Image 1 (cartoon, rainbow, N blue to C red):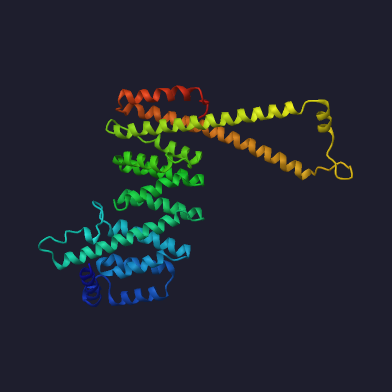
Image 2: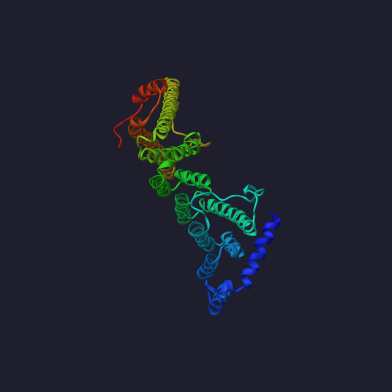
Length: 380
């Protein structure tokens, strides 16, 4: 590896001194480029670095390193601009479209007839793979930025890289799927749209995408109901065909798992309401009797026997809290019904393409019977 890196470095030095570096850019152009790099605006400097890398990526690896240093800047605008530029370089100029990059250790080092060019290209590919992984890590941190615009840009970048290049596809898919649980509704909806766009470009990824969604969002007890809802309305829009029986089988399993979760939530809520009603009934029984009733009717007094004044602000605060609790309960009930409707829609679309054994379907019949009596289906 050290020998290959030395060859790569010497090749870059030779290129910078040779006339080959002046074929695409004249001396005056290079002088202008140097001036831009030293005193130009941020946009001009990024464009100049990008142009130099495009001229010969293998020989300008140090320039790519400069651009990667800008990616790590704390200045949001500079880092975002550099990330976009490196992303474009990777998709257009650097990454292969038909395979993943290899580390140097994974190359056929023991093969015969290995030339100097082989060592140089293998060393370059190893460094490029490390730079790309570094870029993905920076993009991951930006995907959780406090600024919505930055997070939205990262979503678009994840989908573009997934659609165009196979490199780091598992990590990129994980990052894209996780945004279905973003606290901003518009970003969760955007993630749903981009996942469906990806599947439209690569239909063979249906099973992998559904499996990733199942592992990251639907099997965790900590996943919020809103994230489950956006996840469900994403997978129930996947277009299936007779060739997608494996994906359809997995979708059916996912839907029934969600059914079981909804049943558990419904039972827990019913038990909580029953316990609360019993508690109120017991308190009412204890409050019966003339002495207790009179004591209850007496206004609260201070130490001198004077009635305590209830401030208007306290009444308003108590009323606002009660209204907020009531509204939250209504929203939760509405979300349950919407989620139930989304699950049923997906199940209706997936079942015609499944190839499941009768024993597997028999295990789901009991769940269907229970859920049919546990929800309101009048929700669109």
